[in-house]
Image (cartoon, rainbow, N blue to C red; front, top):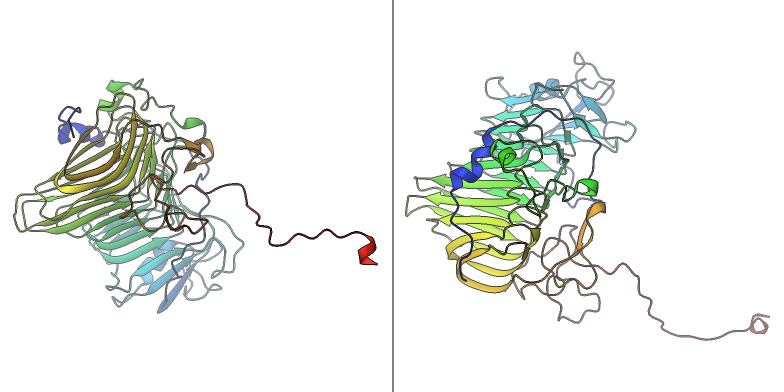
Length: 460
């Protein structure tokens, strides 16, 4: 496809990641209504309990004898066999949690992680329902994991850090699922050399003051999985930072000013023979400088680096997708992605890879696609959404994104875990809808099997 987007230099694109934005104010949780998670509750070989009414001098092994701080429960883990589960009751915990080698924190075991499990329903801690919030206040990072393996975090809300909310370094097999992260001045999630890092169905609290959502890179190999996350800025803030219409302030972008953030940044690069797959699927991102950036590079012919970008929706941003496959020796695939109401277009460079279905609407049409195989690319139609102010990024009725995706290859379920393609009449002819959300008719249908009129007299 003919190139229109000028060549962009990666160091320049990422330069503003290393500058701070102003401090932020607290806001309430905003997140789409998801169905119940299909992930089973963790198996606990050893259980620990943390509650607002607990005490760190307690044993911590029953709800009645619960600890008061999560850190005390983490420190109580006394072996490396895994499957320690820390059940945390509803409330706000004003602490910065540390899972680090310098502290002597134990790792879990492969396939048997230790789990910090928020219990918002009070099912395990016998508390009244409520959010489980970690907020140490300005100046302290809510969670640091350094040089540890096999820890998992679920149903937690991270707020309050000045520079980072999740700071992860040199740790492997970390999973964050169904958590809420409010990006502070710099990064919501900052992860370096964390093989097998997974971000699954998390929500990012954002407004015009929040910073970058994720910055992840690996130089040691291992996979990065980013699936089903919501990074959009809905409500009255949607489309207000000027990214979509070109009214943004370039000087604020170059200095990393508030309100000009990056969305998903995921990279793997090394001169060594590493193996790594970056999988970015079913995410919804809006109002970012770069909403989705995936980059791999290796100077070794023995490296195995792959990018899979499948069924994502990006909107109201300066760019669409930015995917750069430089020197990768395994297949890179971009399938069924949607970029709507962006200022510049997408930049995709994967000379060994495949683009199979891509819908794009940009103000300047400066898209640039370079791939070994390209099919199903649509760049001249407007894929409208149902109601972005209410976090509904489903295609609106009549949207050209409906039933227009590729015949094969789209992720099997959408953002809400509904089967894709949606085929209510079981015709077997439906195609996937472009993006992260499959269109669902909001009007129920009724099928009349038999009709018989009956008078009052008939009932006597």
